[in-house]
Amino acid sequence: MKYVRMPIEVESPEEFGYDRIKFNLSESSVRDRSLADLGVDLRDLVLFYGTHEGHPGLREIVARPAGGGLSADDVLVTAGAAGALFIIGTTLLEKGDHLVVVRPNYATNIETPRAIEADISFLDLTFEEGFAVDIDRLAKLITPRTKYVSVTQPHNPTGQLMSESDLRRLVAVVESAGCRLLVDETYREMSFGGLLPCAASLSPRAISVSSLSKTYGIPGIRTGWLLTRDRELMTTFLAAKEQIGICGSVVDEEIAFQALRGREAWLTDVGGRIQEALATMRAWMAGEELMEWIEPKGGVVCFPRIRLEAPVDVDEFYRLLSDEHATYVGPGHWFEQSRRHMRIGIGWPTAAELEGGLRAISASLREALR
Image (cartoon, rainbow, N blue to C red; front, side, top):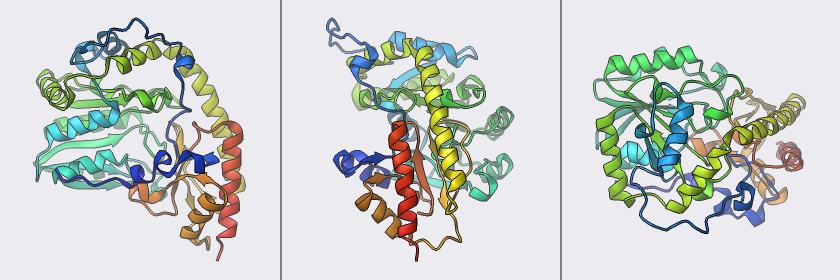
């Protein structure tokens, strides 16, 4: 394994310093919640080794709404979605193996295969095509050596969402090729229209990954999961988890269990707040002539860009934005894209912070004009 620190982590707001940021538009989740917000009482929790697969009640409550006949036995609780992606990558790939990754993507979906020295073919999404996944073009990248195809739906950082028919076509493609499909579904419950089916419910060759970090605002407990109907593969995933850390934290998993029991009320509340934030973002984009975007269809992030014809000194823009306006966004290089792009998170900041941050972006753009 050849580990390299990822720019998105090196430059994350927690590493940059929250005390240096007034308007934090870089987060890809809803606002962080406290134990008091969750109403969790852990005083009687026994701090034992937990069930290796994960908290039984948590696994059940994850599987139930996923549908498609999925059960608790199809769920493995992991150290966040990042832990699930690491387990999947190190289980399915060896040096020289091939995979297909839709790009831009969450960095771990790319950097773990690189650390293994796998051979990656990228399906690069483009602004001009609305960041849409072209299933036919993706299928042409699959070879007899391909171990899996990696996609994120709804997509991070663009917020785009493929149709159910396209997802089912993609499942059929990997089944025909004899490889696997990895779908990072972290934002699945935050789709603005109807939910896509949980990919793992569609085929034993599909693996779904999610967590409590983005939609539920509790990244600090590091609890996520993977789902697969392939029993033999699940046994191997469990072996990987046991060798990494035996089991998860019983504290984290109990908090996760209690948080998910209140998911319906929470999702209703979050959905309303996201729509308000999206309206603010939409209005700002309509009035900001130096920027353009593809409006998101899910999640709490979007990926607008500085217009190509706009004479903006991009490096100076980012310097002004952080140093002079104390505002933080996710620059395009976090996702191996042009720095004219930026990921803006609309779910974490308060309404006033979002408005203030967007004003700061406008001001920095004009101050950076050549």
